[in-house]
Length: 216
Image (cartoon, rainbow, N blue to C red):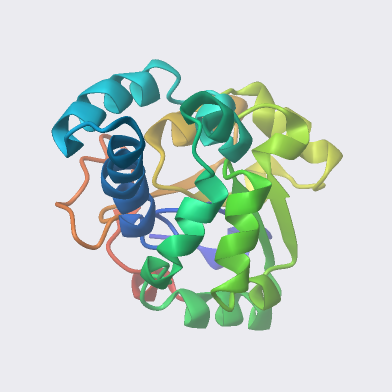
């Protein structure tokens, strides 16, 4: 699937790629609606019916990923709500070994996430990932999400990389498409971002079930 001789830099998404997306799905589809329902004396379904369209209306924008935006919008301390369910944060199988092998093979390991800084800190504090990455970059540092093609150009101001010798692994198909349009040569999707959900339709992208398949 990959010729590692052609790759110098590996850009890695966080949620759904290195980490199980179950945490985030549970947070936004169960935990936040539950707390919203309690606050406004609604049923869980009534809260979901109100919140889900609100979430979808700005999906893929920088605000969609912004903890502070949703804290203000919903009147709930989103960072605190995430903290309450931090026991659900899990690293996908073979991720640790993969990152270690990348280092041994002399490849640069760069986390490139749309996640807000507060979400990123929670994940880094509750996993061993931080010590296995050469550079950590959030879209909020650039003010633009990975879904925008210009993101990959702006990324060069923080990480000097050659798109022709770079691999991006991401579960976000819109982000993969924008990277493809920009000219990043090696692209991989994830079949099962959420360990408790069905396989994802990855369209025309090559994808992996596990990092064991592409171990350098």
